[in-house]
Image (cartoon, rainbow, N blue to C red; front, side, top):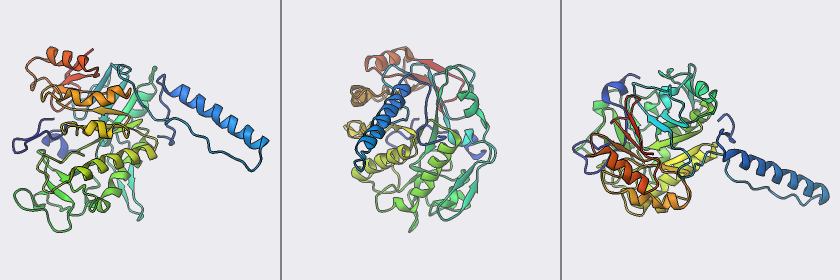
Length: 353
């Protein structure tokens, strides 16, 4: 989404201020898409061969290796998809993939769990139960769960797990005042109640467990993957001086943690810094860039396309002069693009096929 007026570069697509104040099965999560079955078959064959080898050569067991079991779409494979992270939602169309807010999908009884034994109850979202409903469709769609990983959200049930949290959101220092001593919560992202996190390598351990607990919840809920947002504070006035090396390492750690849970993971934004997509392509399964037409940055995603990884590009109809022309740019760069309203809901969608 376009950044707020005080920010020189993009922020990220998030819900409106009014909305936000309201409120895998296993590591080998399977999808119904055509790429998964061959991988699983190959794994089974390799395992069988390994077991045979062990029987013939006792004491010489070999560790089987296999391709990732998580969803990894190719360019042009998923052309019928949608991204909706705030109401009004419309999930009636038989899309190949839906990308929806994790907390809005949370079912009754959902919980966030931590190593210290703390458990936080998560309120049922407006789309509670929809993951199972979507997965019951034939053909089965992929469900990606949107989750902030580089931003603190005062309105979330786990807000208190982030050092610097205050019950009164206005008590958390904002520009031009420096973040509080020991706080990982920086300046606002342009959306009410949302702040940049201090993702520097020396600070992230103070809050990272809270982020990974969200990934654990996504896995338990049955999300096929995650769209981790707000990992690109550089150029967005976050209140902390974030070195490029730290931003890149945080992106990679987010991807690593998602894969450790069998979740597909996309690189969200960050492409505005030249060369970043090429540096991160090996860590991610796909990408979701915003406004690449608006800022003439679509060419930065060529590293993903060249690697055989889909790019789900989104531009906004009120930010591009001609949506049809924007779609032509998406197609020229082999991006599987959409034109959406900002923030993205179920109310408007133009597919760039």
